Image 1 (spheres, rainbow, N blue to C red):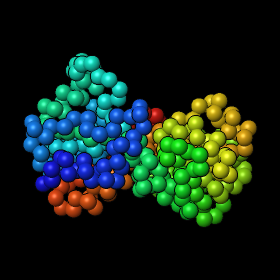
Image 2: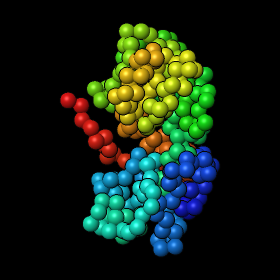
Image 3: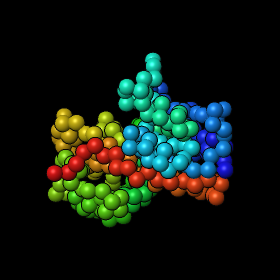
Length: 264
């Protein structure tokens, strides 16, 4: 058994809550310390919550969900079970399940989403992209130059994803060596990556005009999709919690596929 607040301390030691962006809502989404007691013996880790993840948590008899994307974003004026978020909140409280989200703090921190993506891409000399005031983006060097398509296929194989969900924009015939990246939706940073000498910028949710501008600037974009670039949160956070908690609580990884898109 471990106390709820102890788990929050572990996460915040790795990803301090005060580092979140002003628009973010990381931290406790639901905290049932006084209602349900503070002891936790089972934790579910998931990229985010939907109805299937909530059902999975209930069926798995967990007391806590740790997720990347906040359940509650912005203000909330009512909890109404006729609506998706309200219905999830009601079900979670009824079943005694607390929720903690670590979003932009985990994007920025050492060993967080972006460092982990850089490791999966097998980059060396990993550092924050110069000029990135948020501290989220990373850049590094491939051990050997390769085509963007080859790097995309390697990442898909390492993460068990379908590379047909990826998109490439720019010169696909050249080889790349220096790679910049930002998990989630970070296409606004590709200009910083280009200025830092990156041949390729890896992110998700690239818009049409951004892809056009990147091609004109001579930097190739690899769009993994929002899910494709952040799916890695689950295994990474689960590993961090297991290492910190040992046998005091069981940590399980969600088996729900949250990708809303299908390859055709």
